[in-house]
Length: 438
View 1 (cartoon, rainbow, N blue to C red):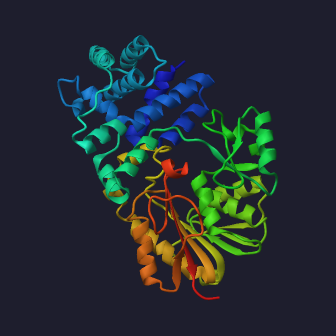
View 2 (view 1 turned 180 degrees about the vertical axis):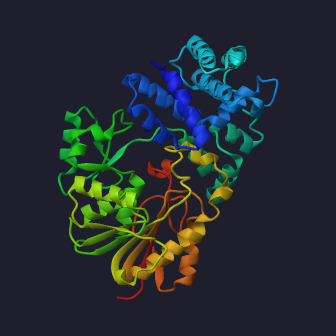
View 3 (view 1 turned 90 degrees about the horizontal axis):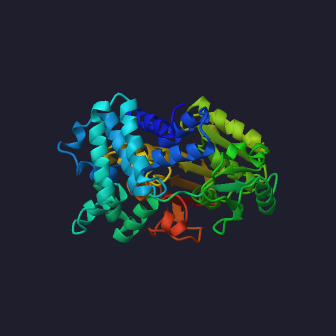
């Protein structure tokens, strides 16, 4: 049987080679494995740790190489990352185990020629501990300390200031809590907490938003819980729940969710409306709308209709909506705690997004009736995708005005820019507009 470290090595190589998201790669590989729960947790810790701290680990490794890091064969490089992570960031792993098992990985994966190198480098890492650049070069120091590309650090410094940037970087390496949205169509917060406790899940009411329950850093599969199967909740970060609070759906209203899949925000909106009125949930792919349909069925939601449609295309028959949500595709820089590989992408990879986002927002505006509400949201922290899109929208749409219905902290003034250190949630952006007239 494969060892836990062998599983971690293979999954990390897949992520590196195919550009897969770590969470999807881990879930897919471990679902069918025969590893114990303890070993699965160890594998997950290794994969997320090596991914989120990649720059930090490479900085250590290169100190002890006689040739450039990029000259290493990919499997050897990954084995060194795994060993270095265990030595520097996993206190419960003995030095001997971290070193010896890494040497074994080299031998078991056709890298026996490098076993001496692996042994020598890891012993030096163990002896010298974590090494960081001089603090005199603040950007380089923060880049290595928090394993974040300098380009992203510079962008955040300019947009949100050095203090917020440092706190964002600190939060990017923290484990995320799991937050559940109570399905008020079937239960209430107190009942759900009691039922979860009976299933061995410690839960408590969230102080940030109504009908939210925190289960901390949940160590079990949510979908295995009886409360999940009965449709008593769906997982939803506080930021997304704030988004629907800002949308403020009412009973018997017509609501459009233009980029809906997998449907979490539409589900919460349905609960706000007590299953009345109509919610039309768009997505461009049938497989994605099927996810929404399945989720709505599990939750007992009856007022959501899914539609395979392009959010940038105008459908005249949908005009006159009370509420329109444009939760647009984005770079995802607000969720790097959950998907750390996103932070390593070049910022130029995202340069086409603002045009698409603006088209969706302008299209969504055409559906809003006079006096109706339009919400624009992203799960990114990038002013080009957030504030600048909304500023342009207001400039070119004088029949809309920006409003701020939520009393919550924000690192920017005009709209809501949510961050882990200020709001206890993912990085997220919310702008709320109201159409003039009655």
